[in-house]
Length: 110
Length: 112
Image 1 (cartoon, helix red, strand yellow):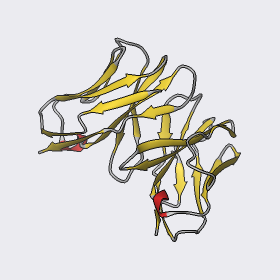
Image 2 (image 1 turned 180 degrees about the vertical axis):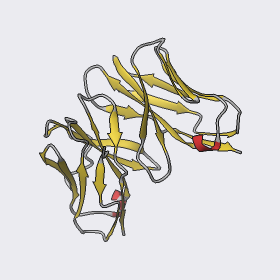
Image 3 (image 1 turned 60 degrees about the horizontal axis):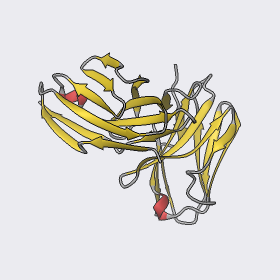
Image 4 (image 1 turned 90 degrees about the horizontal axis):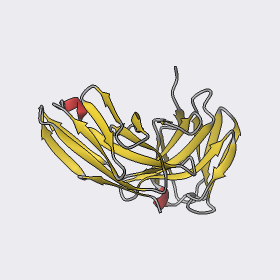
């Protein structure tokens, strides 16, 4: 059974304090790993897709990386507006469904 | 460019009533997904369609839930009869060729 585990559950950072979020996955044949950002009261917003180990993608202060067992979302010099829940999801090679983790709630204090 | 549109945004109903949630996917997308999000269980896939055809409904909790997609620009999720444990936020998402999914703003359902 596909499994996605995110850690930590919650993270509080000071503005400018860089850190990383972890997404560990177990899936039979990865077709893609997806990162989303969700603000309170809104739907998840797509950030990145990673397809193979070693791949990296960046957007502003965020960088996502992928290995064969996990993905990291690195946040460099975060700002309060980066506060949100970050979700990761996997899609396996035999289907079109995404299996989501339970997310990391990030709070960045000014 | 409009994203995924859902209605209503909020729904409060009494136990036993029928509830219908609506979704308009992004034009040109051929996949549509219905999810339910709760604090306890996170984001769960209920059912998804490809080219208006239901492909996998294994996440539909029970027979009280049904979903239809009569055409490429409209889908409904119906709960009949509704129960308090159905209270959650329901999201619709669409994608092109099953890749990145784009989510709507959600419908917050409260069943009293």
